[in-house]
Image (cartoon, rainbow, N blue to C red; front, side, top):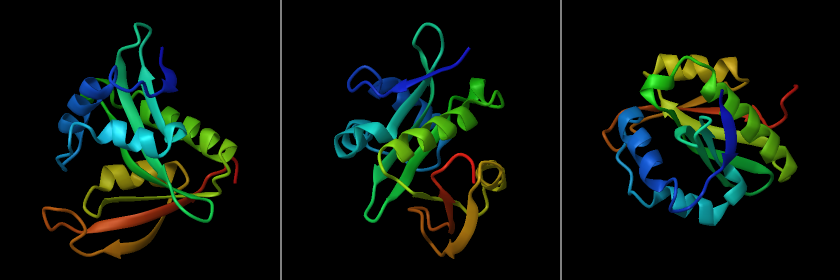
Length: 151
């Protein structure tokens, strides 16, 4: 069983950083989760098991004009394929709408076809290519979605 709860500063940082290192190509500062939390607490959600052990997370920041930007979404490798990412995204959209967000944007590596299919399945559309967007020089793809669950 998966539960989605708010991020807990200090308690979740280390485990979420481990998930990020095992899931994402970019290397982040270990304090990144607390930094995002300081910007917009409602945009930080954690998927946990019955023992409150984090299995995945979503971190987003609030932008101007009713937009939010997903900065990171990752699920621990051993828990992928069980719908945790979709649950996180669905709950995030619910919280975003409650916070007055109308639309969501994100970037994904252009060659990460699995992630692009995941986001498309969850209501995102490709908007434009982002040449040399990532630190390693790889191209990105911007994707946008309505924040509403039922569009």
